[in-house]
Amino acid sequence: MRHEVAIVNMDAYGATMAPIPRKPYHHGDLRAALLAAALEEMGRHGAAALSLRGLARLVGVTHTAAYRHFRDRDDVLAAIAEQGFVQLGQAMQTAAEQHRPNALAMMRASGLAYIDFAVSHPHPMQVMFGDLIRDRSKYPSLATIARGNAEFVTELVRQAMQEGSYRDADPRLIALASWAQVHGLAMLLSSGMVEGVAGAGADSAILSAAVLDLLRDGLAAPHP
Amino acid sequence: MRHEVAIVNMDAYGATMAPIPRKPYHHGDLRAALLAAALEEMGRHGAAALSLRGLARLVGVTHTAAYRHFRDRDDVLAAIAEQGFVQLGQAMQTAAEQHRPNALAMMRASGLAYIDFAVSHPHPMQVMFGDLIRDRSKYPSLATIARGNAEFVTELVRQAMQEGSYRDADPRLIALASWAQVHGLAMLLSSGMVEGVAGAGADSAILSAAVLDLLRDGLAAPHP
DNA sequence: ACCTGAACACCGTTCAAGT
DNA sequence: ACCTGAACACCGTTCAAGT
Image (cartoon, rainbow over all chains, first blue to last red; front, top):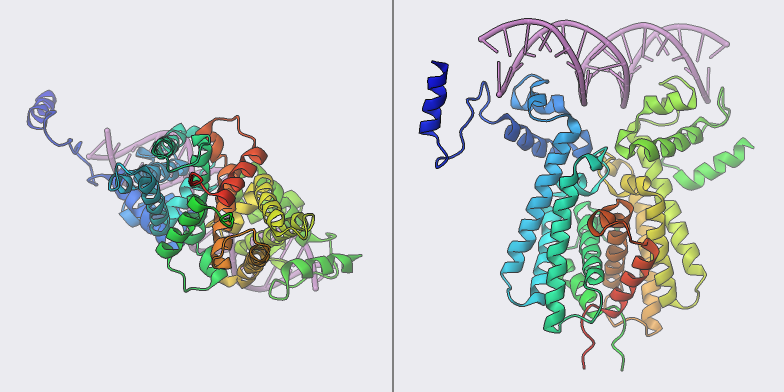
């Protein structure tokens, strides 16, 4: 009898249909609800203040329910970081696509997208690049996705070099310099450091464009 | 003897911070001991895992003794950040001095010092630039010292422009681009991101020098 | 002035038990 | 499979009390 139920479910929601809701007990998708609550809580009290019990309370389940979906607190931080790296990569690639096949413009657009993502998702950025996850080696997928993003940039650099837009150098070095430039500005802007130092009159988008131009053209005076 | 300690503390923490102990009861200088223990603990378990009770245990006092020296947990994080910004500024200025009056060389040396500080003090950097301090506006001295460091760089940029080493642009913009470049590379190196992405063969000092050269000269191909 | 112990309201995590 | 309540060892913070 219980087998019949299983078979009926297979018939009704087979491979062609949307994923089966797995017959939730109290919650439609507790895992997703917890992650959404985590993003909301981070926005309010900062990434470091995240508490599993607080999330459960917010979502309306007992404080132990989360352990069905996450091994521990680090596991939800890792999930947030992973989501962040994926979204960051998508933002960069989507922005780059718009300028294909001009590799130089693609580099610039993906850099601006990186900064824009950081400014609009400061807390995920802290989880992705900060010290919050106690043992990052337990989450090799984070390094894998980050490496994928870096390879995307390196490939763009190679294309820009073939285009004749970039000087002749190790593409990995140019990619690292670009990453560092964009990452540094992104973190300084998204953590409010630039305003703290320069006053509140700064528009991130304008500053970012100007800074990227400077890296492309160099700080040095054009020789006479 | 204890007055010497007090004077050092005044330098580092200024008048706005918690009162300075003059006559220790059990401990020579509990405040300094707690801060030292904090640096040690961060090195072991990460900055986010810092606990006041743990520090007290490490130093050998009751878990409430720390409240004589710090208003709360944020207060010790702010003290660590403040110390960090001061030391970072000193490292940059000391390195720059060695190359006076060549402003271009001074810029380069202070950038390398920034990266070197970050790589050898990753956890203070997280406290200084990360999300750990819940309400940074309660510690305006942090922004003040950071602004001082930024002004030092901007002044160097002005000198380099007068020297003819830098292109004609807003010195604050060139300073921001330099800061972002150096800060981004520093954070990526000090958090292990570069190795996670590029493999473990990277020497920070060599990479840093190459990246700073790229910013100075530009990524673009020299026009023919 | 500085330190202590008890007390309170929180946490993360584990476990046996319920549906 | 998913959720619950009790239990344990931690925290940050406050307070009255000791020297």
